[in-house]
Length: 589
Image: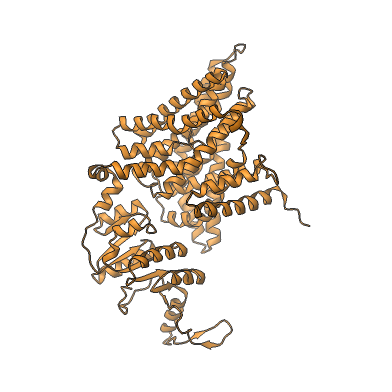
């Protein structure tokens, strides 16, 4: 019998269990994150049965953090980062200070020392990168102003925590009454840490922006998709590791700046698409690793302390963040979004708590309270976001909504369009279709979830809606009820099928044309109401035969026999990405 080993068992068991419980949570209309966390609890030492290696799972989770931050960096630029520095830097510093003081206050009530309280408060002050980005992604907020402030805020927190990890040992020593501390050594350590991080950032901005796109271009020129994907992973993981080993930064910070160095390259979208499956899989392992650390006994032994810890995380930090954002002149919508984003703790809290235990100033109860606070706050975070959105929808005035940049973009969509085409996705294929529709003077509304792209299209005079087309309200903004065609050019065939299903339910008479890559996607899309499923391979073959002056009127099966298409089977309309799209039989393409 084969020995699976702890690594394989951790990967396979964690992903399989997370997938099952994630789907169950989704079925119950709960965030899949809850399912992933429960998978970790089942997989961990607190429950009977098999116990996975916590260290291995945590290390795998770091890969998820790296890929997630690299993907976020691909959507950021130096200009975006500098644009939020005036609120992110002072906001993060004040919020960390408030949370730390609240933690010290709670620890003094419990009876812990001031040193334990300092470490405890610092653990409560920093939010989880993975949780924040998941919440922003689900709501299409990463490229919004609110999302950029939240991410910039978190980057400042990461920098502060990197500095804290370096300074904590000498600070703990200094707070020991019997210790003799050399303050000059502390100053040297601070200067060294800050200096190395600044050198790393400068190198990425000046050298990385030239070298990284060049490396990926060389990889892409080989024509091998495998080599290109490996190059993207090598750059993300390699730079993240170098940031930690050579410059004393964090994995998340290194990966973010690696992605940001590539953001202006034409290959950035392709890079983001290629690492998407790995990013999602390893990010799930992060939540599994958090669940594995949880010991339910803390809820019974220290119920009041647990409740107080959760209150500081969810309410103390959030209220502080809300007032800071409002003081700096931002809207209520922005302030509440930032508050909800920070109402949880994660990665750095565990690292700081582990360091506190190593230094002998952090008791087991404090460590368990941090883990309990992390689990509970992560579970509640999606619900907090939903409450914020519900509150804003009921209380905001028209003026409040118009002030929001996303609302402005969607408010500017002209009403009363008739017989128009809705184009979902404006990538290579989508932009080709858009040009052909424009030449035929067919009214068009583009739907995309990239705010940068939507702003660019609006500046070019194209009517565009920002949002996820799988949400009914987005298609409603695109005036689905009066449209003549719906064209879906997004790469995810199953998501396209869901969009088809919703659109067909609202408009049974609508002509829907969808791009698909694979036969299983094509069948799924056809079953969900598409008028035509568009693929590329057959059309390329037909085009080549056309150049040979041969008319492809028959279909040859894999066995070599000539067959006619099955009667009644959904026809696939095959169009290559760069084809000149001809006039059709009532179809815009």
